[in-house]
Image (cartoon, rainbow, N blue to C red; front, side, top):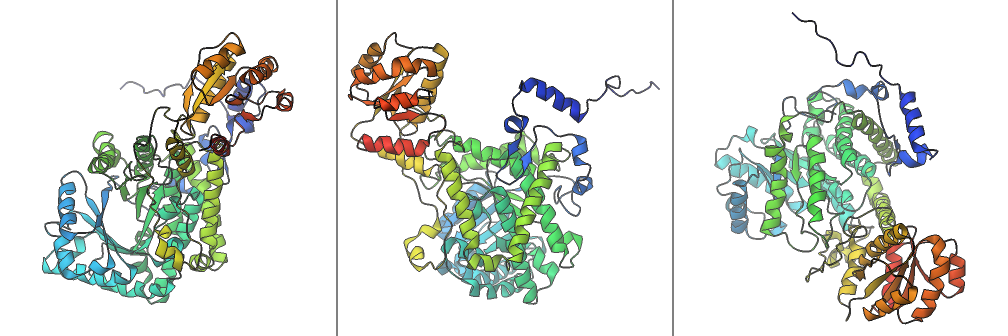
Length: 617
């Protein structure tokens, strides 16, 4: 038999220090920490590279798929997940027809949202007619006070049809604490129904009924570590409620389901779900249950927070990477939010695309065949550990403060998430957080075509807000303020024209013209770039001939001392005058009467609002 040799044995593996020395040379004196180390919103640093030695102290790396603490997934031999689509049920027969249709198009999990007044045997009989519950996961959302009644009706219905009760999978979305956050009302008395609900479903062991809906935190702009830490505390609160009511701890843990959001931070979201399973297993273990009962069951919802009304097809790119994160992280089911949800009730086309986004990952990319494909990645293993530590700190802080329910009733959870939302909106306004197609690279020629934003936040309902005694989650999408600005511009009698007066140094004028076009087009202005002018007079004349409302001079810092003031004087107030950049001579320009400057440090949103005000919009 031929000798087997390991490849590359003649090469010496470089050490970490050798890599760092090479990077230092390539940086040419630039600060390593500032240029290459990422300071996350989650409170820890991410290095530009990781090596095997960085994982030597991580215990979870040695665990196996399907085994405690389940960081590598709940399954041992596959990564199958349910492709779920939710249906708002206004009419039982119509919803039934839609469900039967989409079950033939790749869906194997249905979510029905039913009004409390409609919960009845007749309604459920019509809704589930022809649907085989042993072949599809069924999930129900209704008024919290009707959950026990719904559970009893479902059990009777399944018995009457002689379905194998032990094989049925599904859930009832009972989550009073979630209503405290979204409605701003103390509905804690409804927690008394938790134990009766579990008892009502005793013949359906595959049904979850106590839900942690942390997706609403994600849709309110929570940072990843916040959703993780709060979800864990939320679940622990329900474990305490059930066990204190006399429910066996193993039974209680087996009835809890997590409906979590997933945002565009690709690797961090993969790490979040892995860390969530790891930490939840540790929490449940403290209640004295067997390892198998420590599994965390997660349905992932792609985010609504980062969706946009303008350039809405970019939403498909966002939700696709989000779906990939969730699938790679081995969640149990996924709901892809249709791309048009920010501005309309999703169309049949949008829903079909949303389904197919998951089917592509299954049928084309075979994501369902691999268990913990991210396992062993030095970066993801490190991120899993780091995000677990930050989430655990938040979990402990909530527990020390009296638990999730107590913190929710004080408004502390809502206020913390809303503070993060405010911070993210402020960052977006300054372009510290990019929204592709909105505050970065907007489509210059796109119009709304009559689209108006849909307020998807239930807590904004007029009757609910009148009765709110506590702060409510602010589910204002990240792009919403820019969209309001752009829609206002669209409704103006005339679309403002921004003309680029490019002059001087070729590279600088092109770079600044490109920057200015992107900056101003975010408000819906018509931007006109140019190849360059020999004199400022020629440029101003061309701008006035184009009926420009604003003239943006684009040149180099040094040349602004020569061109900016003469152009300003020649324009003589016939259009708004803007200097692109922050040249050293800015004070001299301001002394000459020039007021408007745009650069990378500008607050884009506030600047554009001010320009609209000057234009009478």
